[in-house]
Each structure stands twice: as C-alpha cells, then as structure tokens.
Length: 140
Image (cartoon, rainbow, N blue to C red):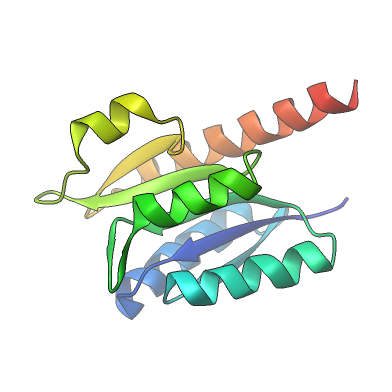
C-alpha cells in the first residue's frame, strides 16, 4: 500500500513532538508524519515530498508562529495544493478573525489547544477520509 504523508507545523517543540507522536502512533500503518518548526521549513518539506511524487494528505498547523500566522501559511498552500486537507490548532485565547473563517475554505478543521487526543485523532481521521474520497472521485 502506498503511504500518505502528514505534515505538522508548530514553533513550540514540545507541542510539535506531542502532536507528531500522537498522529504517528495512530496512523503509522497508512501514513508517515513529518514535522517542521516553521512555515519556511514546512515549505521545504512540501517541496521535497512533491518532487519525490509523494502524497501530502494533511497539514496540521499552529495558528500563531513567528513571522506568519498559520492561516496565512495555509492560504499559500491552498493556492498551489488545494487538495491537501488543512487542520488549524488555536489556543483558547487565539482566534482567527471571524471574517477569515467565513470567507475562506482554506482551513478544513480547527482544534483548540490544549487538544484532547481523541478530538485530534478523530479530526485528522475525518480529513484523511475526505482526502481519500476526493482523490478516488478524481480517479473515476
């Protein structure tokens, strides 16, 4: 079976490791999880995987990072890779502007930090299923 890829982007190394470990434990049979500490590093990983013709199915991105909001990074990804599912992590005191959430389809799901493992896994699982269904429809 051809494995898919999940990319986690978070400037907080503790959160990044916790996030990527939870996703790798749950999806290890079907996916490989990469992690990036910045949007720049994430872009390099995306370029590397795409050059190798690997399927990036899901990006899990923190909302507040140095130099760029996660929503802006995901907007950039949406323009070149609309098929990739996008999950945004937000702190309880961090809220993207409501007009952003109402006017764009860039973010497919939002999980509030500190996340509950079950909620994170269920959200990721749902987005991966949507990706697979969309990919299968395109093949038909």
